[in-house]
Length: 236
Length: 236
DNA sequence: CCTGCACTAAGTACAGCGTACGTAGTAGTC
DNA sequence: GACTACTACGTACGCTGTACTTAGTGCAGG
Image (cartoon, each protein chain N blue to C red):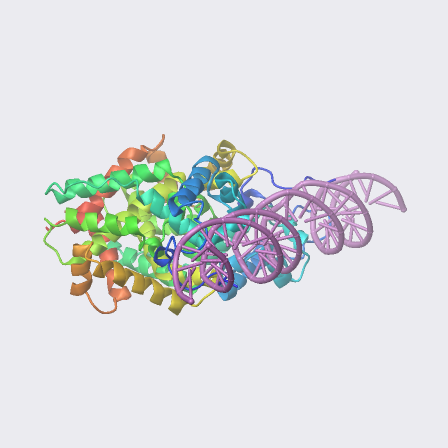
């Protein structure tokens, strides 16, 4: 009998092909693409082993020959999305390059709204994640700082972008599991907030909302946030 | 027959007691505390309606009289954790106060390792979240800036702390679902990373790891990150 | 060449989940 | 005291991840 189930190993260290037996019907990329397709179309919660298998056109349990655990499927998805990162020759202007990195990451996450929810440091070992990290370091070559500082820079910028976009998209992703619509959800929450503010218990928040009435320009806020992170690591 | 299931309303707007019928056996706090106890002891994934009901000593479906949806249970948990935030009289030194806020939030998340995973802007309307936000604004009174800027400051600091602690604790929370131990997981991932670095495909990362050999001082990194955020919002 | 074995593929089954629904019992109101 | 809104709880359904079994395929060694 073959070794079954999960053994402690990273999916990337698992050889895709072992040489013996019939040729696998699908590649790892096929599986990742199918999962990404489902997540894009029907939300992350629709990504189940059964649905991915159905999308591929194979039996549910056959998937386990390629992906030992559901968790590994997520890891494949994150890496597949990471493949969409466009890498360029660093321009010599590290601020401009990093700004471009941040914007691109945000766009990527808008294209795949499930991505922020899956973002985790433990997926930072995937092939495309490593390529991406190396590219960021290359963009930071003109910056005079220790590698440790640069790593912290990249981590902070990435973290800020992820957190920001997550906040942008959170309700949109969550709302798929709600028994009512996103508009209803927002209306209900805003009405509740309004009642709380009006209670007078939170004077500064009341002032804040009075001062900044009207819709928020998410683009402008994002750009300001990125600039602040860049400032935080620029030599004084 | 009573109105059943979920209607579009925030849990906080739902009255805890309506007057008619038998007295409810549990308060909302009881339920939140039970869920938090389970999450602390056995991880977030152990927080199921069945387990929480069992912890309370009631039938599973009775829970739905108090908590219309699982999601609302999470919201109660986040608010219950937020109740542990200690609020103080602002000192007049906004940097000192915000540093203290950041450290306290981190400690809170270390006490409840499931908290970062549940952190979401949509939970920012809970009573203790509002209190916390008002307190942060009070701490920022000495800072000369528009309320909009202060809100962005608070969001960025909170986001940074959440992301950081999430990265600290992520594997620890995830590992409960893994079929092997955290040590094995780490060993496997580090071995893989080492192999990739050694391949020569990532020269800057190799240099970075060569330069910063040895364990990372998580406390020091955290303090540096906080300081950078404070710097980013300090007047020049 | 053939035999054997390592692998893939697929089906069945199980424990656990969130929760819709029906029923029984309780306590405040008229 | 009757009505009625409410609480409490059991059953049941469709979904999940995945352990295990069986059948079939194709490369490797003799």
